[in-house]
Image 1 (tube, rainbow, N blue to C red):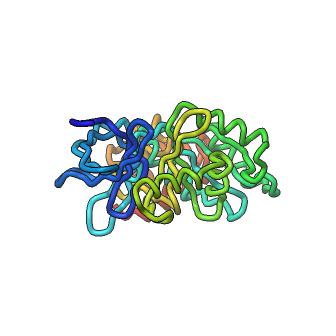
Image 2 (tube, one colour):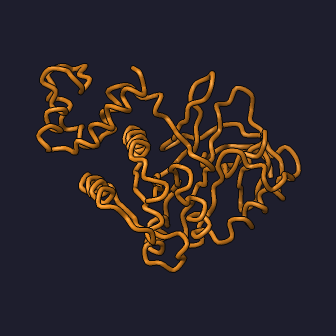
Length: 294
């Protein structure tokens, strides 16, 4: 094998990057001054030794998720994603502020987003159900699953949705993302060990995210922990645009730079007060706006 080859980035391993090419894994370094490579990237690379290579170019991305990085510009979490699945559960209590944050990022990244309610075996309050109906009315798909019930209808339906696309799970800690991933990828540990063995790294060296091929087709990027991506890079207008129900109202505000708070003749605030849009979502928007400190 000689010359540039096109490969797929499937994991970060310490200082190296695992690139898949023709069903083999190669441990690669990047050419100097190359932008940060993300899991899910398609790259051009050169063979530099046995099972080793050098990434020369990142091919154009159709989408990218970014996370804040201390002391520097945002870094990519994952690339070429078709759908972000935001996982949440009754326990720990639903963090709808974090959920809205994820949705706002995806709306501005032109990435499809869907909701996954895990632990459906637990009792659910009417208040949570009311919030879920708001999201469904806005057009967000909602999948109700129980990760521990491997044969549940909800889980089987989710597996079918994941086929033929690149997906990523995200959500707060404790909602069962790992259990859900393990249920969907039964041989996950085997695949992880294969990547580590091929690249001569220990089994616990993946530091960011790992891409897995699903048995029925499609890819799932597993990102450990809560990948809080991109909110810091949004402008005030983009945050408002991230609320789907605000989008058709923004041009009706009296001022182009309306903050949608105490501004005169704000169409969004008026819609919330009339009940045309959910007051709970509007109030969470104000909290996120305050949190971002424009």
